[in-house]
Amino acid sequence: MKTIELNGEKESILVGEGQPIIINCNFGINNLAELDIEKDKIKRLFNCSETAPNTIMDLSLLNGLFPIAEFVRNNYGIPIGIVPIYGLNINFDSKDLIDQIHSQAKNKISFMTMHITADLDLYEMAIRTRKIPVTSRGGKIILNNTLQHNQRLNVYRRNIDTIIELSNFYGFAISLGTTFRPAGICDACDEVHIKETIRQIELAQYLTSKGCKVIIENVGHIGLDKLPSHCALLRQADVPIMPLGPVVLDSSIGSDHISASIGAAMMGYFDALNIINVITPAEHLHSKFTYDDVAEGIKAAKIAARSVNYTKFSEYAMSEHDIYTQRSKKRDCIIGNTRECTRCDTNCPLK
Image 1 (cartoon, rainbow, N blue to C red):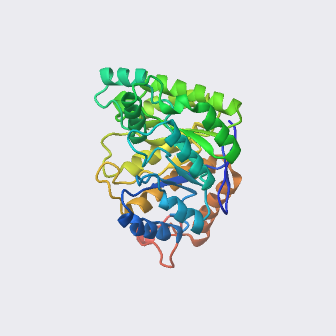
Image 2: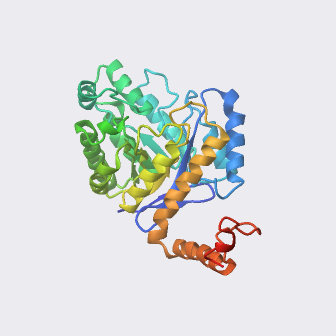
Image 3: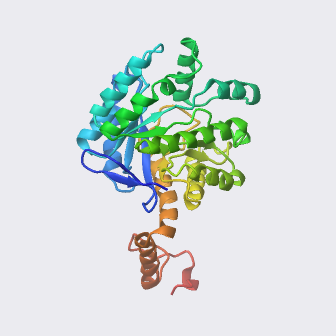
């Protein structure tokens, strides 16, 4: 798997083979009145190492403005991602798209999610075979735009050469968004999902042959039984992988951060995950995530990342061994306070 560098204002991060799994957290607002609330959440997250992400995506819908990206860049300097079409007029054309990508590249955006595989033939197949054809906001926007302009090729495909030039000139990574990720585990690895995955792989190989940095997204909802074979397919892309979730149970509503951490850990162990996208407990409960929602999601994601990093990097293994050593020296299961565990009373096996 290729390794790429995500450029940050103060800190750049290597992602890919031989590198630890990192954590990405998404934020976004639909009006500027919400900005201070998001800033406060981000400040609180960075005040604690347990809740500080490695990268942040700004998913705001604000007429092409990305104020969260600007705030994170100026205050924390970590790599930042966006979806460039967010906030564009519904009838945007090729010039609008390229101007937006160009503008955000000059603003030192590290990676941009582009739904290049939002293809009409896959959409028509999804309508015929799925209860929920599309669950991707970015993919939906591209499909609508293609139909409104009476085109067969979407705006990304029509402008791919210019996008490649901009990516190589400014050094941002193209993250291949997934339009037809399964909205339920029953659709995982269906014909639409597999065909889009293959197209993402082909695009990844083409873009890297042109010198671009590439990330591949994918997945969504998928059962544990299908993950090993799908991981094997995704590895063919030979680029870093940043899946959405994967949520391994549709019934985990209210605990989707746990469901997603299980899926992420499994994908990481099968070498098909390099960046974990944070899923909060409230993913399918409400649209306004609180600080506690985001913090719990990040903690779960970090546990998933650490459980895989432990198996591959000696420094993580040593850290785990240090905790075991502390328990042995203290002769107590409780770490982190001075009180002894009284659960076993006089029958404690560690004493």
